[in-house]
Each structure stands twice: as C-alpha cells, then as structure tokens.
Length: 128
Image 1 (cartoon, one colour):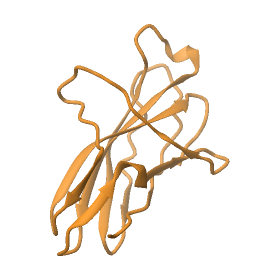
Image 2 (tube, rainbow, N blue to C red):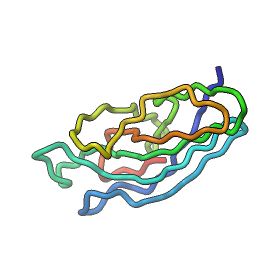
Image 3 (cartoon, rainbow, N blue to C red):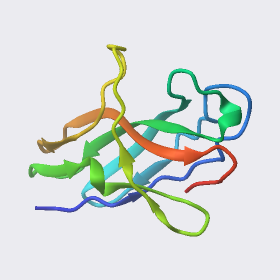
Image 4 (cartoon, one colour):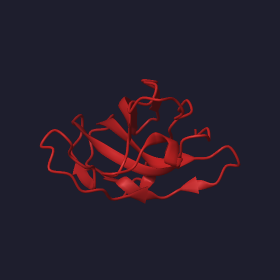
C-alpha cells in the first residue's frame, strides 16, 4: 500500500462571494499527481458569509503515476491553517448531481479520478 500525502496550497477564503479564489495548484510525487481543479466556498442553508464559518469544497484530480494499483483515501488529502494545524475533512450533503464527494479509491496504474474534498474553514483565515 502506498500512502499519498499532499499539501494543498490555497489563498484565503475571504470576500463577499461564494467562490474561493481558484489556485490550480499541483503536487507531484513519484507515485501520484494531485491537482486542485476548483475551489468553492460553500455555506449551509440560512447562513451568510458574514457568519464567519463555511466550507471549502476543493475539486481535486488525482493521477496514479505508477503501473501498480494505488490506494488513495480522502483522509490523506490535507489542509492546514496558518498555525500548521491540520483541518479535518468534513462531510456535507447536497442534492447537486455535479457535486461528487471523493471518499477514496483503488486507482489502477496510469489512471485518474476526481471529486470534492471538503473542509470546515473560517473565512478570515488563510490555509495551505
């Protein structure tokens, strides 16, 4: 089993809109490439950006750079605050068919997958 560890570099989630600044960061190791395709700041129904907390939904693409099957888990994709504290993944529920959560997979050699990884964040903090 190969463990994939990636640090996701992001700009802060402040602002008045619902979209986080898109970064398109890419991390590459011998085993895999992880790319942030899109980042969205999402709120629970009834909340506003001014409430201070929301969710950062990152659409990540993962490519297996090896010929072997690679086990990739959502918990291996990490987000850190400015004090280097790891932010735990969060589960959110939606009826949006375009929003597919990444839970983990066994990824065959040379193949790719994508999905959303979500983190509960404070709009006034910076993350990496």
